[in-house]
Image (tube, rainbow, N blue to C red; front, side, top):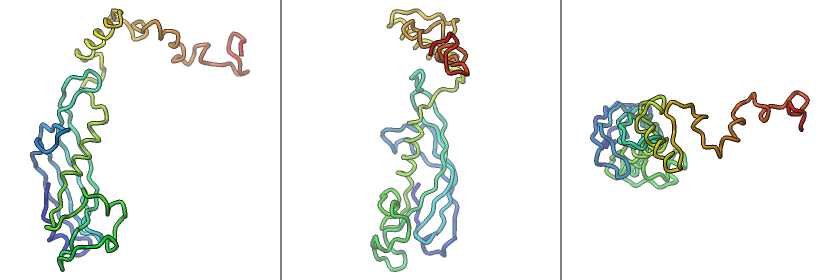
Length: 208
């Protein structure tokens, strides 16, 4: 995920080159655990303010299911579109002052988007940020219906036992509902008298 950007920076605006990613990132990040190579294709395009990197990347992460809390392998894919700015002018070797930068101000102060003084363009921090966002989006296991997951059902049973209630696995969610919440159940039913008013603005029983 590190590229020598010197050649690209010497080209005319619009010049581009594609790179294939096939990188082992399993040891790169403390808070994220990839279990597969990072793969994909990225394009580096010369623009007036530096290099525009675009592309699609994918890998598999070892995470905890947000429903049953069991470890799962979670395939992820994300799109890259970032502008990297050079720290030095590639022709003269002179360090560029902030006022000489021609891109957006927010990009100028992002260290993850710097091409360093050896003209190395490094994608590692940008990739980490994308993966962290994906991990934070409550990944779940492959079961579309959580009740098909043995771990989820067991967790519900355990929680119910802690609360002094035994769940019937064959019962509907409303039948398994804690009686303290049962009074609110009608609010979920749009046809219940407590949830729907008549056209005159009053409840069906005549109360306001």
